[in-house]
Length: 316
Image 1: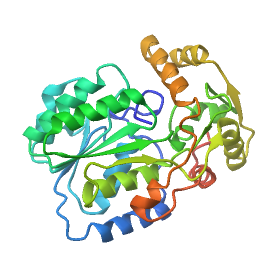
Image 2 (image 1 turned 180 degrees about the horizontal axis):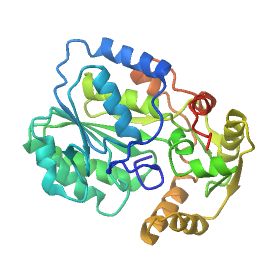
Image 3 (image 1 turned 30 degrees about the vertical axis):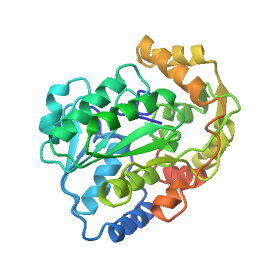
Image 4 (image 1 turned 180 degrees about the vertical axis):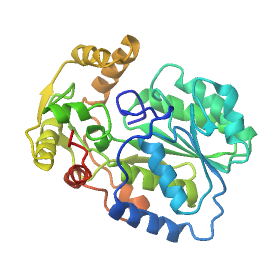
């Protein structure tokens, strides 16, 4: 799943800092393994686009812990970066050896392929050697944007990380209010999804940014098991200590809910259509690619839920 109005309660392109830190135990194991793998490597400066959001913030934290110089890009931060204003991209990229790319509003959105092509050309012109792109698992239009980046980036090494739904959508994203209110409304029906913890995603991204052997790779990342949204709601309720139930809604019904929360009509319709595409069953299977990259199993959804509850995610 890529970054969009659904996945982000805080705006990755804006100044919001998000909520909650990465888990110290699993994050520590991942950083330790990456330090061992990346020993002696000159990662150079890394630009993290959307550096204040859920994925970017975690990547920044891990790179900083490894002693890698980081530029955290955002619309209003110290390193200005706005996907809607290409005139500032070269300044953010100049002198960077690598970049983490989390595109807003979504790689499947209209205009994403053109933006990726422009970014790829700019990255090559600025001497960037490596780009790691966040993409959505099972999104055909996102693949078009991926290829646009590869085709325009020339000699730049490109690694694509295709993510399943973020587990943190329930603790930091648009589904947080539903958990707090006891009802999670979403157009998923009975389809199961292998929710991915963002600590695992960030660890894979940092491994690809700082290690060798990832050039040209496409990693499809999932959690270790698939759950329906109803099953996920039950686990969230147990962890939070309050009843939480899943309420299935239609795509148009969900678009209306998003509009009530301030999402524009066209974007709400786009997201509802996107979820209908993603949740038709073709993304239900799990993969072993987190383990293949990091040498450990991905975090289970129940562990995520217990940790989020312990961190106070659902105390509101």
